[in-house]
Length: 92
Image (cartoon, rainbow, N blue to C red; front, side):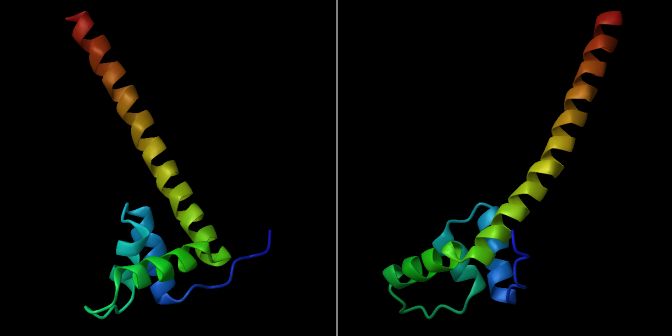
C-alpha cells in the first residue's frame, strides 16, 4: 500500500471528528467553514466525497486502530483488576 499523502488541517480534523463518533456531516461542519445558509444536502455530499478520499479514509482507519489499541489495553487492565478484586473478596 502506498504511503498516504499528508492531509490538510481540515481533512485531519474531519478524520478525528469521525473517529470521535460524529456523523460525517457533523464532522464536516466542525472541520470546515460552513455558511449557515448552506443546504444540508450540500454538506452531506461534500462530507461523503471527503470520506471517500483514499487518504482521508486511510487516516480514519488508522485513527480507529489507534483508539481500539488504547481501549484494548484499558479493557484488559480493567478485567485483570476486576479478577483481582473478585479473588480478594472471596478470600475474605
